Length: 230
Image 1 (cartoon, rainbow, N blue to C red):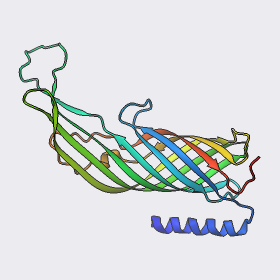
Image 2 (image 1 turned 180 degrees about the vertical axis):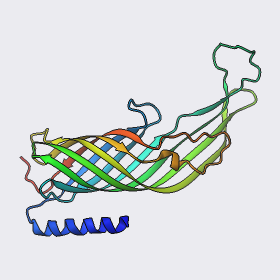
Image 3 (image 1 turned 90 degrees about the vertical axis):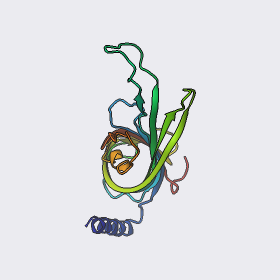
Image 4 (image 1 turned 120 degrees about the vertical axis):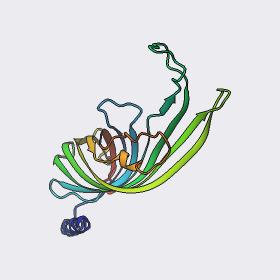
């Protein structure tokens, strides 16, 4: 069903493009930063993207995009508290083992971007559908008997696939004198599920408490190769 909808949208936009001979595509590069919390911490993930605004017809400017996402999870430590007296309130003992990991993903996206304004300044709304190929990895480290160093005991990697939606709202306009360049800034809400990416790992004591959604910010720099440089 989703595939049919996407094919219908692409067909409709192709018809519009053929009817509007003055429409010109724009290329862009972008960077994004996401976190499950409003204020960023070490559990976030980041992305870089390249794409194209295929055409613009009235207030519709559909985009296609390829992105690379990457991030790490919070280190999970196991402390040795077996020899601590009752009511101990001192510094935390040294961890006897810990689990660390992260993920990387290739993401392919389509957005029927809506733009309200003109080339100088406009508000934008970006509903986006994405499909991703995710590689997640975990490593377990244990403290050597002499307590001098942590040695890796296990490492797991797993590939998974997921599709997800995201919503973005922001502004776009020319901040440079050159008409070829336009800057875009958006606040984003993503349904990319990092918990799902780590589901299935069987390293002992791993707690899969990653976020199932995330907030983020994004920047895009558009380049119009068909406009003369001024």
